[in-house]
Each structure stands twice: as structure tokens, then as C-alpha cells.
Amino acid sequence: MKTTPGVLCLVLLAFGLSEVLCNPFKVLEDLHREPPPPAPKSDARAVREEWIEQQLDNFDEYNNATFQMRYLANDEFYQPGGPLFIYVGGEWSVSPGWILGGHMFDMAREMNGYMFYTEHRYYGQTRPTEDLSFANLQYLHVNQALADLAHFIRTMKQEIPGASSSGVILVGGSYSATMVTWFRQRYPELVNGAWSSSAPLFAQADFVEYFETVGQSIRIVGGDACYNAIEGAFLEMERLVEIGDFETLSNKMYLSPPLTNNPDDIMYFFNSLSGLLAGVVQYHWPGDIERSCEVIMSGETDIDGFAEYTRQRYGGSWSSNYASFVDYYRYTGWTSGIMRQWLFQTCNEYGWYQTSGSPDQPFGSSFPIEFYYQWCHDIYDESFYNESINYNIYVTNLDHNGMYPVITNVYSTHGQLDPWRPMGVQANVNSFAPVVVIPGASHCMDLYSISPGDSPEMLASKQRTTSLVRQWLMIF
Image (cartoon, rainbow, N blue to C red; front, side, top):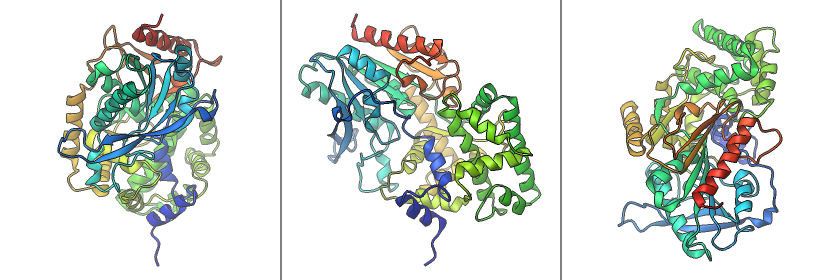
């Protein structure tokens, strides 16, 4: 029986062997992983796994179907009447770490709070439907997830002894920060306030600012020489494609099978390579970008240095076969992966396609917005096409007010280096919804506990978070 690369990836992933052929898929999923959990400060036995019944469709009174939503709970510091701290899950599987450590944990300990970590419908072990078919994915929408959260809050306040009058604080990072901002806008009566770390709020198809910021961050941390080496490597790779020298390019970049004159494979090739550095910058911790730059600048030529970096990251040879990518994400069964669900949300709600559409970045010009529209069409359904995707994005901004959310009691924080920052608010929304951009910080970097390594600006922001939470809860 002939085994296609897409099927082989599924087999490899089932055995945990994703380091070669499947690595481009893994790199994409890593961009949407749970923010790396903090070091635990408490015994893992303090965390309980629980389930709550939710409506499959919160907006259709004639649909009585339900599902079980998973959440984690830690009540070790709770005293009746104490606040409820809810870390909201995004496009990932929730794990105990964020209610065993981090700055929210510290605040809950200080304020006698009850901690929760809610799992988003369709992610992790929260599986509302029998599979991920296009028809079943229609119930995957942020508005449904926000309604799930509203039901969760109401239920916890009713069922937990002494919690009926407790204040509620939401905390979110990345997409879940988007959610807590929008929740405070849509259900202000249910929460006292929200801390929103690294939230993109403006839906946009051609997200050229992402790689612009990746490039700027590489210049800031890694220096001009590193930026120029990356740019030189991509220019040389594009030159080899232009003259049709696929053999040289494939040999240099460890491609197996070799690249051919297939436009889809070529776009996927450049998209996959740009993603290697996207993840490093997005979750940069001191030393990460510097180490990448050290390898990239180690070659005799720019392309040699980037090829060595690619070899190290992909663990050897790799494939840029677009058909395998499509086959992999067309699979409708439940797996531990999250990208079939998240890509659906981008087609149906947000866009946020990280393209090469700007000249002000070092990754060339070979993965334009049209390539991402094609993803939606090829992976899901013919109802997704350029105009329909952009209409969905328009509706999202209309529904949630884009860069102009109508909110109070939301503290929005961003890292200067974070490629998602341009899609979030950059200045105070109003006097009751402050915003700060933390110099030198990356995506969700402020969610961790106060530490001696914090910059003065990072320390000030964390202290301000605690002060605002106390103010919202009227704890003085």
C-alpha cells in the first residue's frame, strides 16, 4: 500500500516521532501553544480536574444538545467571599501550571482567591461534537466560547460556598486575552475586571505587521547583521527558485523530496522557513534570539548559515509538500492537535494570516495573502473564498469594535518584541482601561511571577496589575 506524506505524518505523530517530515506542522502549532507554564509554587495535588455541562449552541433555544467542558480548579487559598480568579484557556489544552504558579497565582494567594483554568470548546479534552467535520465546526466561535464562560461564572458563584457575592477577575494571554477583553465588553455585570496580556483585537486578513515586527525584534535583540543575514538567505533562495535551480536549493536546505516548480510547494516552503523564527521571537526569553542569530551567522554565506539553522531546527531533512499539509489538516478525527480548529477560526472569524506582503521584513515575498485564502478553501469548504473570509473578518470587527473596544476595568499589556502587538490597542482606551507596552518583553511575558530578573518596566506593570485588581475588587 502506498503511504502518502500526510498519512505518514499521522503515523509519526501517533508515536511521538514528529521531528523530521512533520516538523513544519509542529512549528505552526507551536505558534499557538499554551503560553509556557511557570515554575510551580504549590503541590500539583492541589489542582482538581472538573467538568461542567454546556449548551452546544448557546443562541438556539430549540437546540438542546449539550457537552462537557473541562476546567481545572485550585481552592487551596480560598476563604468564603474571596474572589474568583479565572485563567481563560485559548486555542490549546489546559494544564495545571497556570494555577500552580505565575502572577495570578500570587494574587490569589494574597487575596484568598479561588483559581480556575477553563478550557475552550473544541480544544484539549473539551470535545463538543463527535468529530471535526466542517458541519460540526460551525459551533466553534468566540461568541459561543464567551457564552460558555458566562455560564461557568454564574454556576460557580451559585455552587461554591460563600461565592455568591465574590468578585471575579479574568486573566488571559494571547487569544484568551482577546476573549477576556471581549467578555468584559459583552458581560460587564459578571466580572469586576480583566487582565489582558498580548491580546490581538483587530481582525485583519493580510497581517503584514507580524513579520515586520519579527524583523524589528531581530534587529533590536540580534542586531543588524543577523537581520541582514536572514534577508540575504531569503533573497538567495528566491533567486534559485526564479532560475529554476531546485536541485541546488533542495540540497542546501535539506529538502526530501526535493522542491519542484510547484507554486503551492514553493509558497509552503518559504512559509515554513519564516515560521522557524516567528516562534523564537514570539516567545523570546533572553538568549533565544541571540542563539538563533549565532547559528544563522555562522555560515560562509547567508544561505549556508540559514540552512544550518534549518537543519538544527528540523532535525535533518524535511518536506515542503503542500498537499501533505492540506491532507493533514483535512483529517476530521479528534487528535491532540489544535490547528484544524484554529485555522477554521481564522477563516471564519479573524484572518491574522502572517504573510510576506510587506517589503519591511527579511523573509522575502513568496507567501502572499492569496496562499492563506487557498488554505481555507482547500482544507475546509468551497464556501471559504477571498470575499467570504474578508466579510467574516468585517463582521468580527463590527461585533467586537476592533481597536475601539467599549470597556472599563481592563488592563491591557503588550511586549515590545511581540509580533502580535500591532493587532492590539497601543494606547489607553480610556482612563478606566489602561494600556502599557513593556520594553524588551515578548508575548505574554508578564504573566509570570515578580522576579529579580524583571526590568523596572516589567516590575512596574506587574505591581500595577495587582493594584488594579485590588481596586476592582475593592480590597484595600
